[in-house]
Amino acid sequence: MKVLSVSSEVFPLIKTGGLADVAGALPIALKSFGIETKTLMPGYPGVMKLLQNPAVRLEFSDLLGQPARVLEAEHQGLDILVLDAPAYYDRPGGPYLDTNGKDHPDNWRRFAALSLAGSEIAAGLLPGWRPDLVHAHDWQSAMVPVYMRYYPTPELPSILTIHNIAFQGQFGADIFPHLRLPPHAFATESIEYYGTVGFLKGGLQTATAITTVSPSYADEILTPEFGMGLEGVIASRRDALYGIVNGIDADIWNPATDPVVHTHYGPTTLKNRLENRRSIEEFFHLDHDDAPIFCVISRLTWQKGMDLVASTADRIVALGGKLVVLGSGEAALEGALLAAAHRNPGRIGVSIGYNEPMSHLMQAGCDAIIIPSRFEPCGLTQLYGLRYGCVPIVARTGGLNDTVIDANHAALAAKVATGIQFAPVNEESMLQALRRAMHLYADQKVWTQLQKQGMKSDVSWEKSAERYVALYSSLVSKGMT
Ligand SMILES: Nc1ncnc2c1ncn2[C@@H]1O[C@H](COP(=O)(O)OP(=O)(O)O[C@H]2O[C@H](CO)[C@@H](O)[C@H](O)[C@H]2O)[C@@H](O)[C@H]1O
Image 1 (cartoon, helix red, strand yellow):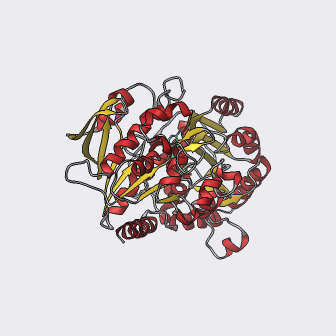
Image 2 (tube, rainbow, N blue to C red; image 1 turned 90 degrees about the vertical axis):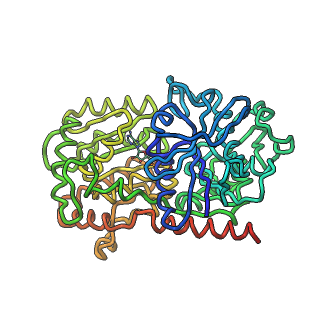
Image 3 (tube, protein in one colour; image 1 turned 135 degrees about the vertical axis):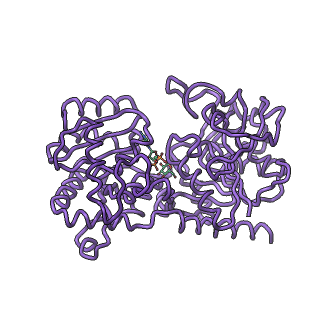
């Protein structure tokens, strides 16, 4: 089976968050099931630099007003189609934000163009290759199924995966005439959304199937609390909604071989983590002692509950813990966390910025990772934590709920616990979870058991890839009947 995946970020070419990890790892996992994936992504400057011997596969003289080309290249096992459109992507800043941290003003056109190119490839425009199915991700490529509906594409099934419903790609109605869609596309059963244009909304209405990145999140987004205004649309597509939990790339995230981890280890050599712990203490200027190190690796946002980490930081220290934070995001949260580090020298370390190697080392050297998300479609850092023996302490929501088994008495007795869950998401309940962690940590036998159990969890893509294959196959065979 041939699949076209369309994503605005793909690891290892460009990553701002978990979407990149999934868009980069799923095609590799699907290979062993005989699925051949080509991944279409924007040609940001950093991506263009990494391409080796790209071949020009397609040219557009006018893709929503600008010329563009599709280049094809192999990159670390991925078959990449890059949309080379300098007017849209060759500029300073990141994939979505300019150098001042503001949205690029033409984001609607940049990602509509990506989607339109995707639908053209779906229609068979790439010489010698036509997919059997298209898999789009988040609002940035949610317009692929919309264009597929209105452009004369041969009947082809499409899947839209929601990684985060908080980002919906909603724009003023004035952009509609520039999208090159027929007038009747501006309708409730398509992209019209309370008088505006909704990219994600349009994708949800037009994709053959919708997936979320965990079963719990699929249930949650049917409610007003988590649906962020789209719960009604999703409820109307309930029969086409599936929750498939993310996996992780178990080769890239392997404490026994990870090149950035100073001292490798496995479940039977957990003592080796100590040296990695010392490296973390040095990097973050922490005291060398036996107090547990709690870490946070995250976008610093309200979604991720980072205000709670900032407001309880002194109390985490008072409990006897040390805290290290790696992240970037809202300026107020960055400032509050830096101030907490300043107040607690030797006990709290904060590094503002994005640092992929350090994120690996932290999982390999810290004792526990705190993930107090208010909502979490899947979450990957708890999966990395499980794999690295960095015990996840998580809010009981979405994918966190689906992947971490709370260390309650029964689970500990049955030796199945892998972490700690808490609810509701507030200061008191999070601190109570940290107290429980301190208590378990004090008995190293119990703690080691928790780490080992986590390391045994199956967090690889295998099972989830199998579920995607089953869904792909059922959609493709339905399309043929
Ligand atoms: N400062 C930093 N330096 C280095 N690495 C950093 C970092 N900050 C974050 N990261 C990394 O970025 C990724 C974040 O992934 P998450 O799944 O936690 O959240 P995100 O909200 O981006 O993804 C959305 O999509 C994913 C994928 O489906 C869902 O799991 C998730 O719930 C959803 O919100 C992880 O690989 C993490 O290690």
